[in-house]
Image 1 (spheres, helix red, strand yellow):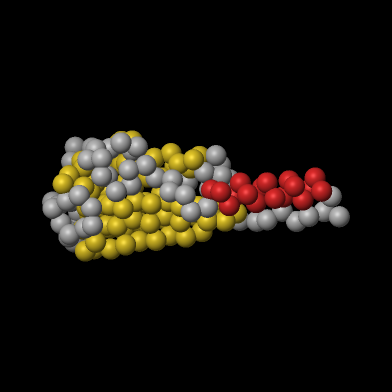
Image 2 (tube, rainbow, N blue to C red):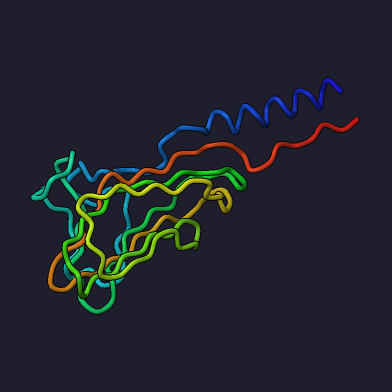
Length: 167
């Protein structure tokens, strides 16, 4: 019984130690470059720029890709079954030619076209870690303007289930 209690305590401690820790590298793009991010897709107009619209940071990611979207992604160190919260800010002025999506672990959590946002904060809770790593990605295109993204964050919450003690 003592071994079981010790094992449960260690499991709980492992999940608790992970809770609240920021998992995204350079989520506010303050390095002024793509450190921590992988670029793919149509990157013809995908870059980190000095912030030229209202935001609380110096740099933002912008995509003005036409046709197929630009993609930025990060592989996050996660735990299977752990719950995560994803948040980010989006700025978009176009009403035509714009597309945006955010994926966590292969699941689309945000997806829209041709909607205006003036630095809107999005938060998605109870996203489940897919294993020891989970892919976070953003896709964006905007013709004739740019979609801007900033303040990307993923933090851990709690495990989806707690093991029941056996008698």
